Each structure stands twice: as C-alpha cells, then as structure tokens.
Amino acid sequence: MKNLIFAVFVLFIAVSCNENKKNEAAENDTTVAEQTTETSNELAYQSFGEQIDDKEVLTASEMKAKYESMKVGDTIDVKFRSKVNSVCQKKGCWMRLDIGNEDEAFVKFKDYGFFMPKDIASDEVIVAGKAYVEKTSVEDLKHFAKDAGKSEEEIAEIKEPELTYAFLSHGVLLPETAEKQ
Image (tube, rainbow, N blue to C red):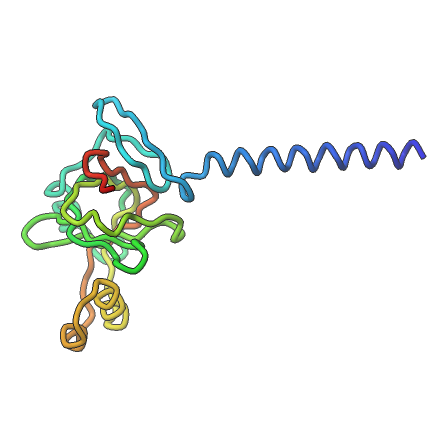
C-alpha cells in the first residue's frame, strides 16, 4: 500500500513539473506571441520569431555584396536591415526585401513558425537568419506570384527557373513606428 501511495505521489509531482514547463514554454514562445522590446538604440520594436537585437546589423547594400559573392549551396548566418517590398497576402508567410538595384532577398520563416503582418510593404525591418542562393523552380515562382496577387497573365509568363537570393529568418524586428494599427 505504501508503494502504491508513493508511486501516485511521484506521478503527481512529475505531471505537475511537466505542466509548469509547458506553461513556461508557452509564455516564452515568441513564434506564437509577438513581443515589444526596448533595445540599446532606444528604439522599440515589435518582435516576431526568436528574440533578436539590433546590434551588428548589415545594411541592404552590404547584404547585396555578400549575396553577389555567394554561389548556389553557400550559406551564411547574418542580420541585416532593409525595406519590405512585398509580403505574402494570404498569410504573411514570406517577404521580399529590397537589397538595391531592383534586387530582392526572398525571406521565409524558420519552420513556418511565425508570420508577418500583411500591411508592412515599404516599412523597414531587421531580419536574422541564414542567407543563401538557390535555384527557384517555375512551379514555386508561380506559387509565390499567386500569393503576391499577380494576374493570371503575369503568372503564365513565368517559364524559367531563377536564381534567388534567399533568406531563412529565425527572427524579425519591426520598428514600433512602422507598426500599423
């Protein structure tokens, strides 16, 4: 009988500890909830994904130079600041960032774990993650064009794969002043 009571007691403690860990994980999960963060530059940001800061951030032109030195298969961990050209209008699951001279970085989000507001085109963001160059298939290019709201005629004109400056972001900062209500 003592063994049974002891076993139930141990089971109760294990379940209670597990629930506490789940609650702490939910409170700390930035992929589900947005957070506002004060940084050392005294700017407030809305944060998406993993928590990042605004230190050691490359400019868009510095990022473009890095992309130009890469070939398909290369990756680098980096953080850069750029203007948002467009955002997926279905879910906010990707962005295109201006890196200069009509070139863009195509940004997706790690593990499809967070989304961006759909109304931030022309706002500036800071993204952190892995930059890489990839060959994007015609099928994917058409899918992204459809998500962006392109016409059927524009989508039909896509006939060849493209080299894409790609970025897999694990965290994004959007300045509070750019936040839209």
